[in-house]
Length: 242
Length: 242
Image (cartoon, rainbow over all chains, first blue to last red):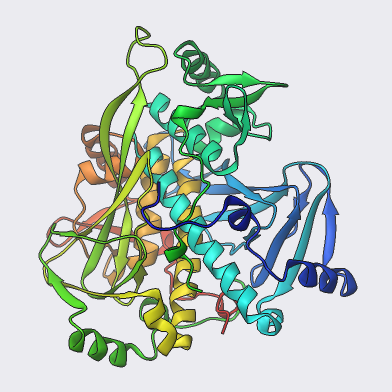
């Protein structure tokens, strides 16, 4: 998938050589907490967060939208809509920089999600680790550009399949039928990511299943055939600044 | 907009203290080239690109989509659609990591767009600059999360207004009516970013103008009233790892 030499997926998903020391430091300094499913992680701008275990769900709130009718020129209505913006898996960093007219929030996506937090200057002790964190953000940025590519497609079914493919490329785990997303995602959450509704997502998921482009795995997890997935096993070593 | 202390916008848009030295180095080493409007910048994975002057337009290609009908189960059709993924302005870095089923490309958005390129290890000479580049990618990543937030909205007019607001927050220049985007963007390009068509964008732009949420500036540039724009004049100093 990438043209250059590669790094194993375990290194990508947990690219931190000094991880154990960071984890010990976080425990000692009370910079560690475990969250339950759907519990909000009260992330503040200026702090860096690391997922030690579990998964984080990033969500965006759009707060302003034009009036439904044309009776109130110049006035935009409040019309909060939550959008699913992706996962942050174990070993990955995240940060939240709140910004109007949109705000970002983070939630534990599964039980026992363990989070470490620190100030950026705490990383002065681990310059190599700092670089790995910054490289992880570069990688996440590239993934979001791909995500924007799929959301630019006009047909909702194209956006849906592209969205699922990108998620499973990044987080999928192997199964008999291909690769499956190891976390549940509701049709409403999927709809909120691709600019559609729960009802439409349900209908189009059925269509994709009929075309055998997706299937169920286990307890309602989403699976994609191996040949459709360019599993993110490799990342160009050239994307590492080290 | 950000809660913490701030950095001036000129520092954000050109955050490179050693810029002049880099520019001289690029000229000496033939790592500098000027592109005409809409000329493709042949960016390769593993290299880092810097916009010295002008603006880059990032574009994504989605190459695969499900079949229109249900006669070909398991087969996805080729259906190339280009999506506008944003600008990279003067002083900003970009990189392209090609990845199926989507590929990213970069084009000069205006004439006389000047680009410097280098290998990441070239930055070994300028460790402070490297950190600024990585911080710039962190910032771009946060902006893309906001962009994803607006694309998650169901109504096309919401996506359109959110999209324009985010672009003008970041790149807008002041004018009598508010802030305007200093570059032309076709309705087809806007449609390709928000999952809509040229025709729909034209209709909804008219509606937004009627509601006085946008206006024209000069030669068909898009303007947003000052009160709608949280102009990106500030970025939390805490987002800087320095």
